Length: 280
Image 1 (cartoon, one colour):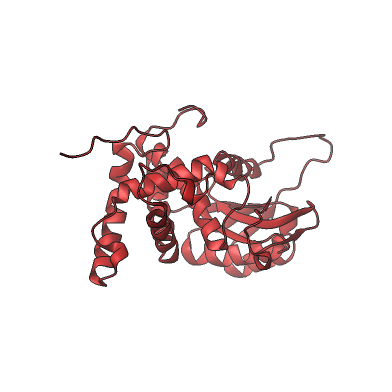
Image 2 (cartoon, rainbow, N blue to C red):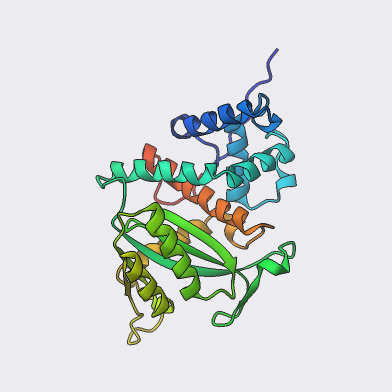
């Protein structure tokens, strides 16, 4: 007699969202089976594995605290590590990104982007060698540098020590942007990306335009173009796992940010987005 299905969690994938994601993970499993590695073999339910990753991402719990009605936390983390290492999470994000762009009536590839960075504190479990001090914001931890399109949808993410300058991170992001999205010819950024990043972008054929803050306005003000990427960071921070950096490896931090974006993209692609994600 088969076990009854578990009660769903708010972070679970709907059938419509899973239908968009399933081909990518099924193809991954088929490739793994060719190599005779156990991880890609029969056993774990890939939908339940991804549901468990989404649960960790949304609630902020440690892997070993996963509820027992999910696959074992070791199984879930093994898949998360494998999908990070071979680029499956990144590929899935880009696939959903293009679907959403087309649904919004845009070309699948963008022509402009916005760049920004966010420094966050790290947990005590994070190796000190991957951390640094952001002197400007007085934060000891890591820096998340992201590239979004003009809709605020994630294109690229890079996690470094917080001590890495915006200019240095910006140059690396622009290089990757030119390689993966050659249609992009325009970028907007804040004043931290002046000089070196602008010159580097010009060499790559990307016009980097700095949007400064209005010194006449006290407190918060929405800045032209830049408000889009700041809203994207707001979306990310609704996932409690990302309120602080808990990941041992920077590449796992990048995947956690991509998982948050994938959750958003899948909802937008199926029309299941709600005005606020805080509601169940």
